[in-house]
Length: 366
Ligand code: OSB
Ligand code: MG
Image 1 (cartoon, rainbow, N blue to C red):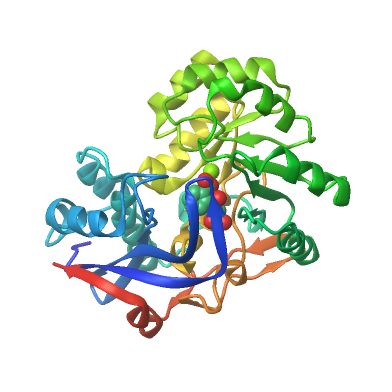
Image 2: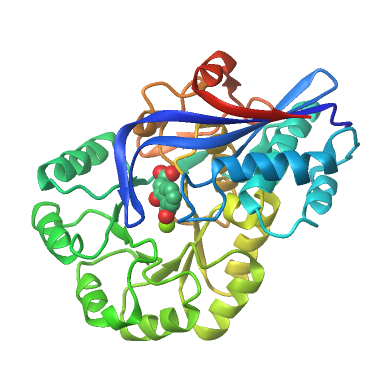
């Protein structure tokens, strides 16, 4: 397929609920959407970058620049037979995995539309009902947090992930466990502790958690290994694992037992699938994380979560967890703790371009 035109737009969309992690609190989501055109078809992808260089170093203006200067020139006007061919071409770019993912996933949508197949089938997915979990932000007001937890339980989410940070950890967890004794609970620290917080982390690990996600810094593989030796709770890595090499180092050191696979963080759906397989070969369990994506990124994420390798419920939630109105139709819905995959070609949802227009703050095209 020859890529005739590429466009990237930066969108800023109000979140339904403020979302606070140890990096900060956000009330809007600023992300980058990528559109590719070929033979009368349109493919959509998302570069679900961070608003600030915290979780990752790619931000919307950085991503638009990288796409305009380095990624689009490698693909526009060129023909690629398969997504693997395109991934090989843009894989030559060092870094910027989220930006590359925007283009790779848009091409996968385009390609799957051209062969009339949903992405999850093309990727080799085996399940069509995706177990859904939810990630809840830090709240200073315990009442607000408890309301959110009750909402998530009423909705039927299969496990709840709570964000933690120093001062909002042990106290919060003991309150939560008093009121919600046996719910499936885990925490995500987003790198906010160091190994000198070992006794605090030991205290956190006493709340019967499914896992502790990314307690220490992204580069702290050795300290994560030290921590994993000291606590029974599984350590899960997110920020630390940028690809297979990081995984091998983590396995060699014993840094974790679980990996949160985010396809944007590793440079695409193909790389995400490869990482998941490598994890299983090494006895590491995997699940799909989220990046507060719009429905476009979420649809791709759901396709990845359809692979048999993903054995634990991920951070894949319904549209109404994030938005008053998603930019896709129909909205992603969850029933009985599962999201049902669409069987339509490509991402399986209609993209509502007039909603995107209303949220667009910057754009580039080639
Ligand atoms: O660490 O998993 C994370 C969102 C943005 C950046 C990092 C993370 C998250 C989430 C949200 O936890 C998960 C979701 O999309 O629901
Ligand atoms: Mg995380």
